[in-house]
Length: 171
Image (cartoon, one colour):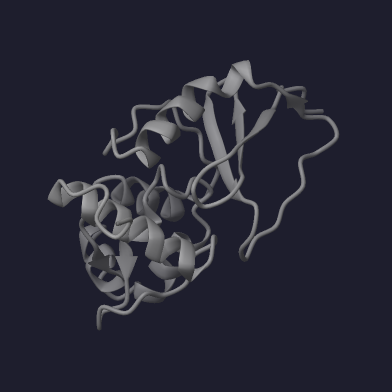
């Protein structure tokens, strides 16, 4: 029987409500209020704002354009292949996009583009592990757990901040 305590909390963001999930080892998941993968917390989980404050603060800084990289203890659950893909996602610089093919090459699996795409789609820590920075080889926006409008918003926000023009498009 697993007696590990799982904490969860919600936070408001410019892209809607996010649910944060963590265990003693670190942040495990970030869920979108809307999008492809709707989830419900287990009744055994503990609602705890305090336990997740570390993640909430950094996400608020990210959305305010004040943070370009996260410094959080992470504990995503996945296969060794998925973990390798997610680790490589963390190396994609803020404001930069790469293709699924490039991501496959970066993990020395150039023929595994579809598998890389599937692992990218199963990333349990979107935004923090920036799967939104992966696009189609032709530059098109492709699937994202929070929906394509959310992916578009995140990429545009990062581009504005990287250029030093946080408020462009809001005028």
